[in-house]
Image 1 (tube, helix red, strand yellow):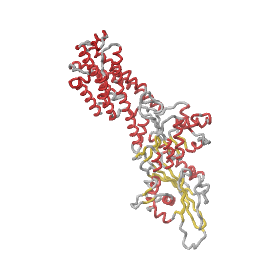
Image 2 (cartoon, one colour):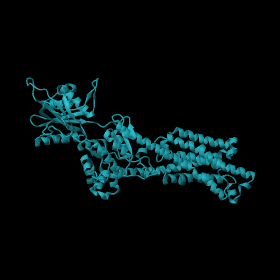
Image 3 (cartoon, one colour):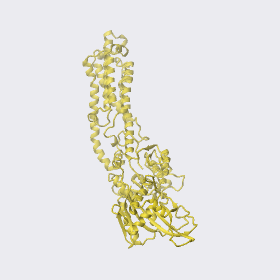
Image 4 (cartoon, helix red, strand yellow):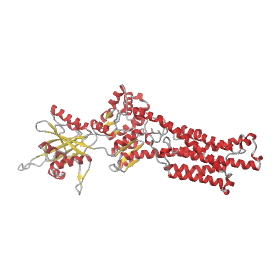
Length: 632
């Protein structure tokens, strides 16, 4: 964070704005006074190496003031020692320090002493304590609007000199209980500070928007500052299209302040937002307000940490969202605990926040959140693909048993079924854990964990009614192509009545069915590698899966041609022509799947264009990975 501008009230009564880069030394007594107040009113500590430690905001102000006065903060404090302090808090939104002023020589022992009161904080709060002419007030407000419109954080400083009894004890924590005057302060000036977004923040927010997540900004900054920053990083964008009367409502609720939230919280403690969402008739105006907030609000400004829990509850109960909440302070702990996913900052976060959170970011970087979301989606997607692949072979495995009841010769033995399950499916299914992400992984709407099951009717249809059916059809076709199988089926001859030649023919046909099913599972493994992306574009980057496919083909060939394994598994050696025919199952599945994926990708592009107009609410009905995370 850097102090970029200062604003002072000149002796002539006009407001002057100076860029920090242009001010190398105090241009006037007013600038000097502002810099002095900046050095005195802060909680900065200076390390042994001269490094300033403390709040980034105060560090930026102190650095500028030290440069302006060519004086260390400790020297300024030694000249006017601090005797009392009211620390900054989210309720006051200001901090106050009182300093003992050196008395003039020759004044002797007096019963009174001069004290310098310095007030620093949110401009709207500090200016309430200042005596300013109406014209000056307008000039100050104009400067504030200009600086905040640039996305800069602005702090106001004012001072008042009072004379108190020598033994006077300062007491108080706010305006109401202070035993010293808190009115008629003299306006000293403004400090404008810029905290540029970290590298990658706009890209991360855009990525989360594409993933179907809504990013919400919750800040203590002034609404004008918050709006400028939100527009800069892409939280407030034109992608969300609302027309007619809805556009006016969206503009009204686009930014909501803490003061507004305070007036919209149920007065009865027993009636929280969760109960209000279930029974809106209890307080219909409050319910409507929070419904509008959840739908339209993207920035909450000038909020206190205690409001964050209320905001989390609103998105949970009025929007039905899964909420991930970031925070670093002690007061953020309730909101972190309330959210489904609490994310604490590992560098600047307090221990209380880390204890309340589910995840701690070691680098305090939003890009790590996106990376975590992507990894979570990848794990979920790979598990889904593994289940899809495993279920595909169950239809052709089960059909031979039922076919035997109709007089069809045995097509698959129990040993061959176990061989497929243990020797083919298990290891290949495990290898999906190493599957890299598809291109569109973070471009698909999320799966709601409470409303959308991972194993749903679409997955069951894909495995049992689509790939499984293709495998079964090809397996049976090649089974009946084998010699004697069609005749034995027509005659419905019992297996106990088979001649030796018919037994051998049945074993060769069973081997053909087994080999075709193995190749069908190879095709299923390749087909389920991607959900929508073409396999020819995606390639075969999962080396563990490739190894497993090679091993399962090798195991199948060993069982077919190695005499020691032919007996236990009931297989027979097949000619090369039959081995080649069995590969048809793999080719058919891969080709049909490529045609399906091509069809799915083509309308998806037009749907995405529509989704960019609808915003995060335009949800596609496609299987995806993780819950929606409105991000605060």
